[in-house]
Length: 220
Image (cartoon, rainbow, N blue to C red; front, side, top):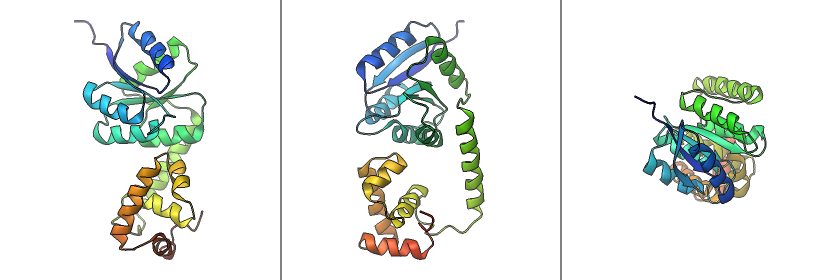
């Protein structure tokens, strides 16, 4: 019995690039493109509709970027291998993508052999990223383990809400918070509304005072 091809979803807002990548993947017997999307929201919908093994996900897209889309997808289907598509080896955005659940990245100028090698490795459960990002991930998870043993302020908040609250306490506005966390401004507003409700405050000034009294935002 022949091995089933790797099912791939291609996500990129540039139609010509997307079509070229689809043609490359469909020309190889070991891969088959089962869907495509041009935005993060479409990627989430197509993932549910096509159940791919691997997603090739552009980082920068309108509406919802690839990092936030990856976070949504991993929350529901963590078995899927997400590979980020990027123009540059930008450590910050790639680190954020790995924290969101991505398993690797491909530069948009990569040749066919490199694309196929990365897709195959990720489909087999491997994670591929450079040494600088690997080092940052190790530090990130070590800090996370240390924080689990510490007293966490506002335990009713989710981890993401606590991140938003910390940045608010540092004086960042909604747009800056969205940029820092690679999420949309609307998502930031939703988190802030939830924070207000859980902490029983009426406005931003009150919640910032509470956050600073609890020690949040002091290192910003």
